[in-house]
Image (cartoon, rainbow, N blue to C red; front, top):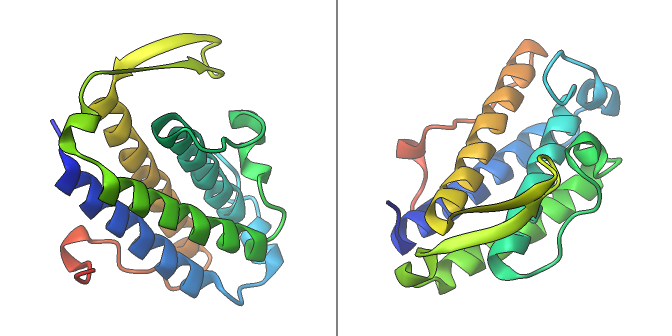
Length: 167
């Protein structure tokens, strides 16, 4: 399904996208970032927080590191400010990239078992599918952020994978 090279490419894509979002949103007023725009997680900052929360949760399952506090309902409030979000996002993107670069394709084989707070039960899925989900989840919600930025009159960054600069 996927291999080490896929994970490395997607880790670099994730970091590139988040760097562009950070640069694009730096200096945007707090009211603009917090305004409820009718998205599932409300605002630009709420959605940024949710993606960070989800990435942290999945990485805790993949690398055994720290997991985020709270569940999905609280995920939109992970960081109260854009500055604290961007610092944590930078650290997590380095964690994801480091994890991907240390992988062997064999590390992606087999099952992953975890307790799902969303479903209230243990889950077991193929590791490859779980990794694919993490990267797909990021892309899905960044698309929502892109739409909210556009609706707010902000310039949204290029998101086309084909235009990603070489790492």
